Image (cartoon, helix red, strand yellow):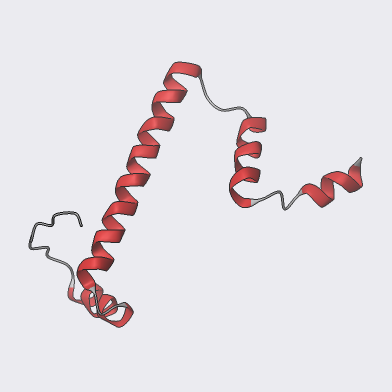
Length: 82
């Protein structure tokens, strides 16, 4: 089990009300949201460094990445066009 640190966070009252509707474990919910944001920031930093070193991604590279992430939803159209 990882260690934890108690902190105080101030949120708008309407957000707290919605949060309590979503979960009984506000701390866990917030911890997961923070973890997700940290992963997003680290990935963004990695992509920025890659582009600075190697240049921007081509349309083909971006299409390939989308297909790997979301599946190849457009593959049936591509097959019909061939």
